[in-house]
Length: 194
View 1: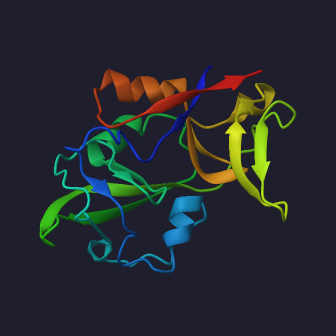
View 2: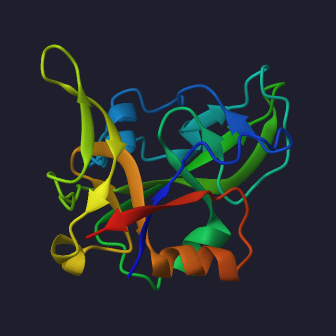
């Protein structure tokens, strides 16, 4: 089976789509958790109407795509996508509904959730992947990913990469589900598997 990187920025060439260039309001203690696969339950308001994302002035698009592109590595999906993927092997998943406000601060949509796959998965072939490190030895970037096929045998259809947990990876089944349903603003990049 093939696996893909799911780009949470979406299609940056389509300026008609909504694009979020700010952090969410209402979950200050959980921002990092929901973008990096840590459990956020308990740090998110019970009244999820308190979670808000606001569209920025620099991004004038108002079209509501199936995936809301953003700079914060959040997986923001509409409820139709969530309903379609629920039959897949998603593992431990947290969903947090939020309100999307337009450029004037008015409600633009209440039909989206932050999708937080909890945990990460170690599936890289470390010998064949190419990494860039800082002078202190901290991983900055993965220049080339190569997956180890054996490590993927138990992988979910949606998961986070152990070495970079703000990266979302999906199976071919996930990608096919998105494409068959015609969901918009999804970009997939196939990852080499050995």
